[in-house]
Image 1 (tube, rainbow, N blue to C red):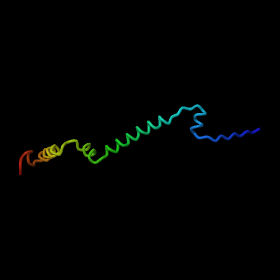
Image 2 (cartoon, rainbow, N blue to C red; image 1 turned 90 degrees about the horizontal axis):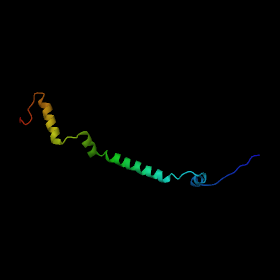
Image 3 (cartoon, one colour; image 1 turned 90 degrees about the vertical axis):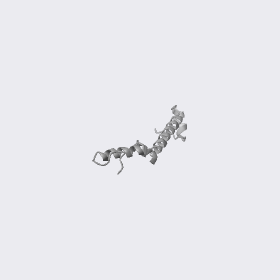
Image 4 (cartoon, rainbow, N blue to C red; image 1 turned 30 degrees about the vertical axis):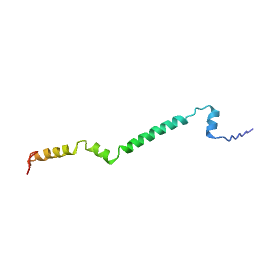
Length: 82
């Protein structure tokens, strides 16, 4: 003997019928956190943020550092004029 039962219901109705918990609020919370992290990651890749990360020194400090570097090769001393 073969019996076939066809049930027409939505996934939500089947979940409730089987007694499974409602995970929609948890999924929404996780998606909101992921979206926030993605937005923060996008904000961290702006040209200004990248320059700050790659060059933490101020422009005048960079100029002094290059002057010290080139003066070690026998050029002008920092603060001297040519």
